[in-house]
Amino acid sequence: MKKVLVLFAHPSFNRSVANKALLATLRQMEGVTIHDLYQQYPSMFIDPAREQRLLREHDIIVFQHPFYWYSSPAILKEWMDQVLEYGFAFGPEGRALHGKLLLSVITTGGSRESYDPHGHNRHPITDYLLPFKQSAWLCGMHWLPPFVVYAYHSLSDGEHLPVVTRQLRQLLLALQEDRLTLAQCQQAHTLTDLLEVL
Ligand SMILES: Cc1cc2nc3c(=O)[nH]c(=O)nc-3n(C[C@H](O)[C@H](O)[C@H](O)COP(=O)(O)O)c2cc1C
Image (tube, rainbow, N blue to C red):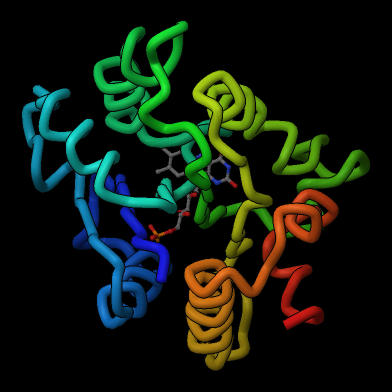
């Protein structure tokens, strides 16, 4: 079974609803390590050697965070700057991440419709994730379609968060157990689209 490392980035976790629910689900899963970056590095001084050790020990790397200014909260960018070094993550000798999977698990304030050419965010969420996708490619990783929870707060259905947390568990377990192929993943816009093939 594949080992999962969740790099979690939320600067105000005490006020979180969506990420808190997702994280609670991930915590209960076997083979999943939760690594809360703001908790581990409150002053943002990241330890690259420790992070690189963690990366080597896992097969699926998850970036979980709320969407902030069409990207991640700052600590995840700092983590990338410090940890994904030449000679480790890229370059002729930098093969430590080759073949690993990279999955973004994201919550947004904007609705699904807003991330549409006619919506006020004007572009699909995957366009905004291009720097993550290309970074994965540079590191020899397989970039997976993201798991996105759109605008959970505007939905009146109180069952919504339990439904999406269940979907995340189902999809991540399928990835851990190799029940989803890379070809299937590459064809999907978001990971949720793959529920129908499970
Ligand atoms: C500083 C900041 C920037 C944000 N930028 C975006 C954004 O670019 N797009 C978007 O859809 N939502 C944006 N939001 C809304 C958050 O993504 C949303 O509140 C969060 O995903 C909800 O998850 P939580 O309950 O775990 O905090 C932003 C919120 C903050 C505080």
